[in-house]
View 1: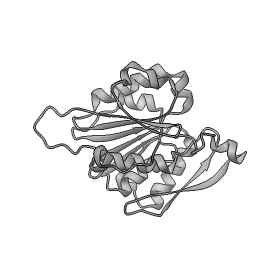
View 2: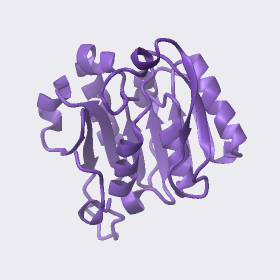
View 3: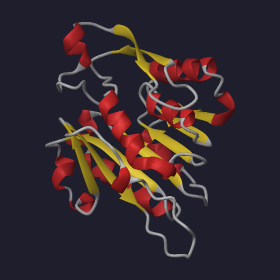
View 4: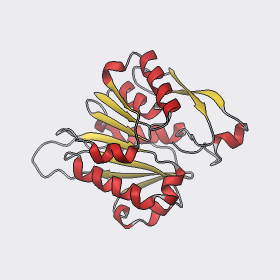
Length: 225
């Protein structure tokens, strides 16, 4: 999860924990709201970035498994289900956040299409057996992991790249100016910047003659950085 549009942590804006609601932008749950408790350590992905992400992904969402790692509020995974994802895996270690994801999934009647893993993201990635079909993976690591656990994070990304099937898409949401900007393993990734937020995008190359459901990056309409 990331910071609000002006870059300041939500808790600095409100001075304390606050119960708030995040609107689902599109799909069969359009207009519904995801409830969450915002703290200094939880920074919901700004709507502008969320809209840009799903615009970029295009046909790489419907019918696929969506993996929401460092899920936080769970809004990315719920939005993916709203837009036609076959199933969402939510990976979130914090017990309170996981509880709220579970409550929201139940409230939206999405329990059959959802799996919630209350565990450390890095351990989950190491143990995960990816499906043979293409998946879409979204990671929004905490700022502390970006700056203090960069090597661990990069190793987890490498593991995901090795596990996912051809045509799968991995996107990491980060902050502009973080150590990931100069990380050699990510230099070849496509980058999209929205204020202080940045999306790093990688798609596993197709080596067989199967038609691709490529992200619609060339035809997207996204907010200006």
